[in-house]
Each structure stands twice: as structure tokens, then as C-alpha cells.
Image (cartoon, rainbow, N blue to C red; front, side, top):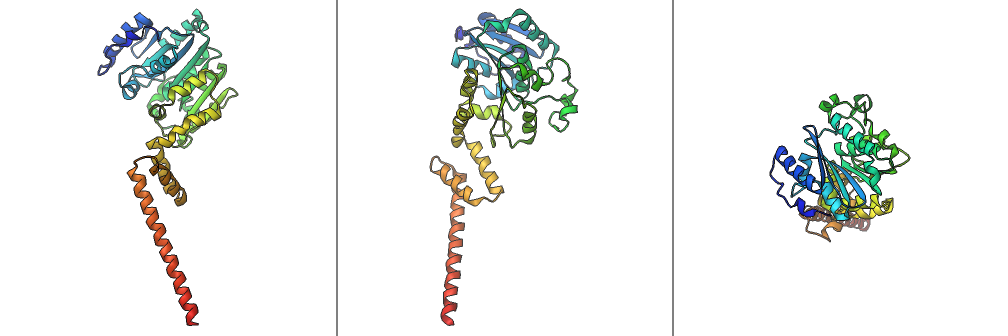
Length: 327
């Protein structure tokens, strides 16, 4: 990525105001920086002819990035893409007139027309924003992790996670994300199908141009899981290049076999369902490949149980033989 040295500034340990001031200095040297009121900003880093439009929150960046740089920068750098990074001070779903106006201006200026490909990316509330604002760049690619479709209680009254945010306006411009994604060339919605509320939102994105990928047992922190497995950049890259298919996604998700949180959730589910043979197979698979005390203890307990059952069966058979002899 051109002007990469501009990012060699210490960003960790800063409050939002100071962090944003440093981002402004970076933006002025690599492209532009646009404050969008007190809660949002946009930073453009010009590089290749593919543009990644990423939506993130300041707390999310702090939790996921060791160097406090936007996650979108990591994905863009890996591919020599240009980056338009939208950041919110907290979870706002980017529902703000300043943000509306910014995307209106980009559209009027033909900003997106300067790129061969445009990719919108975000997770959770930021996934909502990625889908909603993709309407400003018809023909774009959208990758959204466990996005909300809307918080309008008339549609999603069943989602009790964000009751305070229902006061936000989701019925005006850039409002209902599943409708806004209609203009995209292709949308990809990735979610844990065993998380009921995330799955219900994902169902609202049923569209001709949307592919939904289910990733059970990865939980509600899906972005963090894909990062820890080292496959998030790969997924976004394949989506941008038109190479993300059911088969390629399944191949990427094979990384779950080495991912502890996934394996532990799968074990807990199998134990809850009392599927002991599958528990034994899973524990054997895991302990053959890595140090996993929890799985090793469970496998040992299963083997003791099986040995005990075998001893009981032998004793019953012996009792039967003795009874037959007595006759």
C-alpha cells in the first residue's frame, strides 16, 4: 500500500478524540480525512483500483487490533487496495445525517466510478451499515458478518438486544438494509445459524443476489473468530474477486478444526445432546492433533465408562453361563 509509512504513528492507548486527531493527520497525507459530526469520520487511503469501504467502531478497533489501526487497513494492505474507512465513536449503526450527506456527496461526485471494484465490509452494527450504504455504489460487493437488517421494532420487535437503540431512525434514508443491498452485484451474509437472533436477521436478507453462509458454533463474536483463525482477509479477498463459492468458503472454514473456542462449543453441544459416540470421535480427533486437557479428560472418562460397560456385559454373560450349567 502506497504511503504505508504514514501509518507508522503510535495509535494505541489513546482516547477517541486524540486517536481521531492522529487519524486526521494520516488522512491528509494519504488521501483525505472527513469529520462527520462528533461521532463519525471517514478516512480515504488511495492505492489500487479496488476500493474497500469498511465500517468499524472505535471500541471494536481497540478490542481487535494490537496497533489500534482500522481492521479495513489490514485487509486493504494485503491486497494493495484503496481504502475508505468509516469509523463510529461507538455502536451507532451509522444512523446519522452527516453520514447520509457524505455518501450523497460521494455519489454526486462519481467517487465510486473511479474504481474497477468496490467492496463494502462490516460486522454486526457495522455489517448493517455496509449493507445499507452499499446502495450508493451500484454493482458493489458486500460482505457482512452477522448484520442486523434494521432495528425498527415494527419489523424486529423480537430482537431484545438493542432496545435502547430503537429510538434511532431506521425508516428514513439508507434505512432497511435488505432493500439497500438490492443494487449490489453480490452480497454475502455470514452468521452463526445457532444464534437465533442473528439467524432471524440473516433470513431478512433473502434476496436473489445474496448468498448466506452459516457458521454454527462460532458464536456472536464472529469477526474476532475469523480473525483469530486467520481467514477473514481471505474471505473478503475471494468475495471481491468473484471467487467466493460454497466450496471455497467451506475450505476456508476448515480452519475451525484448529480453533479452540469452536471445538469447545461443539463438544458442549454434543454432550448436551448425549451423543457419546460423536463426543468420543471429536475428543480423539482433537487430542491426536493438539494439547487439549479438557478433551483428553473427557476421552479418558468415556473410555472408563466403556470399560465399565464391557465388564458389566462380561459379568452378565458369565452369570448366564453359570445358570445354564446349573440346569
